[in-house]
Amino acid sequence: EAGVTQSPTHLIKTRGQQATLRCSPISGHTSVYWYQQALGLGLQFLLWYDEGEERNRGNFPPRFSGRQFPNYSSELNVNALELEDSALYLCASSLERYTEAFFGQGTRLTVV
Amino acid sequence: AQRVTQPEKLLSVFKGAPVELKCNYSYSGSPELFWYVQYSRQRLQLLLRHISRESIKGFTADLNKGETSFHLKKPFAQEEDSAMYYCALGDNFNKFYFGSGTKLNVKP
Image 1 (cartoon, each protein chain N blue to C red):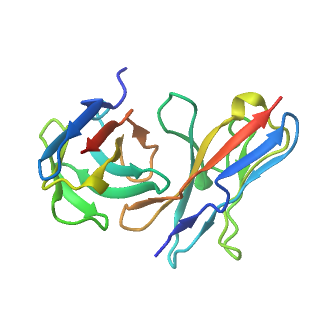
Image 2 (tube, rainbow over the protein chains, first blue to last red):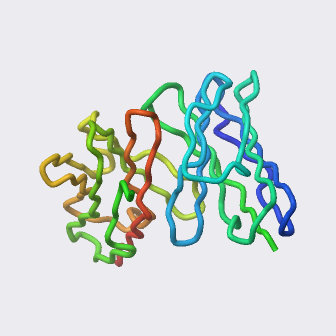
């Protein structure tokens, strides 16, 4: 069975541009979580989608947004990119609350 | 507010020695606590969760509500245990808070 897949693996953008990151959860999983892993800061919670709706978000500005599609895949959009947005963005999926969350390999976003 | 604190960035032990990775949390409700592990070049994966009270790969973790801790322990470390370990807390609103991680290095 395929795990959580994220694309692209690497993304290089210039400051001010927009970035779109994609995540496909494990088949049957309805919850998708997004995290930012900046160097030395651990994992920071970004967004949680479940059944197509945004259920919760972390302490990030509105230029971080996303959506979940009917097939439960998800997109994370980051507008007006700033240098400090450079990080590894991880997506995780789970079947229901507090069951095991399965992580993707991440998208390495570099803003120059 | 910092929900999960892992005070050690790096922990080095010799093979066969006991290991304890510290995790303290701050939450007023009834949290769910987890330990995740990331081996070299692999994705982050769940190691164990406190509600299961299970032992995985010889690791155990006990939730101490008085000390608000959820330390990860193993009596005899193995070289293959070398990895990055993250403590995580799930709150009542399905937010997950991760600590900054502890890198465990088990020396031969």
